[in-house]
Image (cartoon, rainbow, N blue to C red; front, side):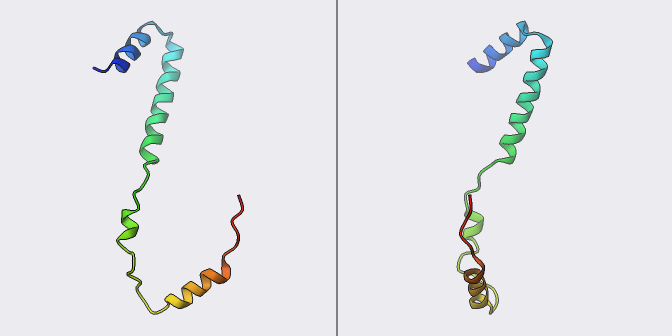
Length: 73
């Protein structure tokens, strides 16, 4: 077992029930956020690079240039 896990278990043994409950809620939220915030590598996008399907590339590109605006932050 890791040192951190050992220390956590020792601390839980002496902590009041309310603190343990809050810690559990916090730990569960951390675990949820880690699974949903996985950063992508972009590899899936690269599979489609230079593989335009259709004959409307110029029309779509012109539409992008005509409708883009300056980013507002």
